[in-house]
Image 1 (tube, rainbow, N blue to C red):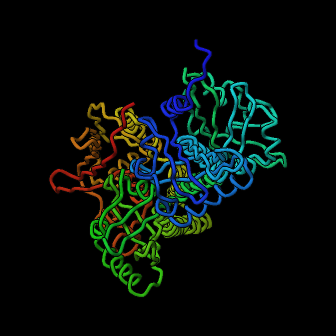
Image 2 (cartoon, rainbow, N blue to C red):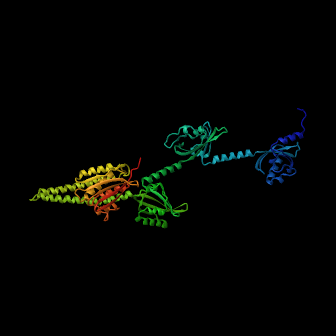
Image 3 (cartoon, rainbow, N blue to C red):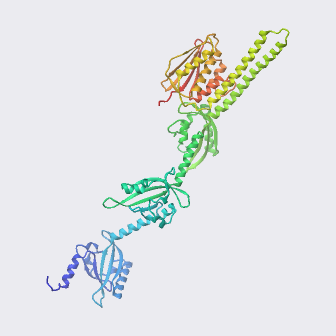
Length: 598
């Protein structure tokens, strides 16, 4: 290499070619006296470089920006030392950020500066992004914690402090897997390290979402948290950090528990909720409504809903709804409705008018009061029947006791007459005892869940035949072969059939009556049981019991039997019908639900 120095111009030319940032020379008045540019930095100038020469700052920039630049030039020339400034320019290809070093050049009496600008756009954007991330990190409504692969907690935000009940330095002074965190599953079991979301992310590299647990805070209170944990991956795919988001799920958990309690209460109380949109005429029902009415969905129109109610109750229900809508006064009434399994049940409806999201609505509840209604009816009927029967039997007993006493005191005493009085007293006593036993049996059965269990009808019909044939000589009871099975309580079905056969024998005018018991499945998924008898039929007064809702002049019975049959069959989800032909006798037909398959 030559020891001779390169000419200054050659050095300058070489620098111009390798420099990648825009550079200009300005004088003390802010006039551009030189521009250093090449193919690498030409695009970073705010104007075409060759057009800058001879112009000043105020011709190129806004007044405010030109004044700012000029102040920097003045400071550099006055102090004689390099100055720095950051600024932003709008170029043809977008906004760019620069940092300039402004250096006096030309000797002691210099009146010029070299303005060398560095494009810091990428750095600035990284800084802005980082600042945004840090701001979001701090103001996030979710608690955020950053964990190192070592298990150390690197960062925590304000919300994490609130949720965990600790100061930030207390959080970052721990590892994520320390037992002091006191984290538990719902049942109170401590969460092992292997199940911890951070452990799972560190081991698999996959995020974990919606991990619910509760923690015991330092003050002894419990807090439910929902955690999401996600990895920050390096270029090689390894987990460099784990970010954990913590959300307070305490109130949500309480609402879930309240909802479960409400749903449970709906079921226990046989209650369902409903809401009628007065603009669309559509009804939306709760899970309780669907259960009460036996439907998978309950979203009918008002007219569709009304059609399901008993014709005798429909007008009253419609009037009550109209009055509630017009006056705003709450409504309450009782009505009969047909459920999905075509059984009729009593419901009490209550509702009031409200406004929700600006839309007028009718909101109410429905409670199944069928058992209450049946219980009222049973009390009324049994009270009347028992009073009637007990009074009649006691009258027989008292009358024959008086006659027996007179007979014993008579000079014309007759053993046969006395024996007749005694027989009548004994018969009345046995009938009272039988009535009391029948009432006790009925009370035990009617309060049970009568729809559980499976009953094989062949065995039931055979047992009824054997028991009653033994008690009544001269009767013929035939049982047709059957494999039918029904859902229900065996004791209740036994009692129903015993009562029907006993009634047939009681009202028969034949000395050797015949009864036929049959059972067969129907195409509609039910089982029909028939009790066919010859001879005289059930009296008209008794027959009306099977079709009536209340005890009274229309449906009046001297015995408990047919009422018990009506109540029990209804509770079993079945129905009773009676057909009578003077030539063929009487047929009572029972329909029961077919037993469900396993």
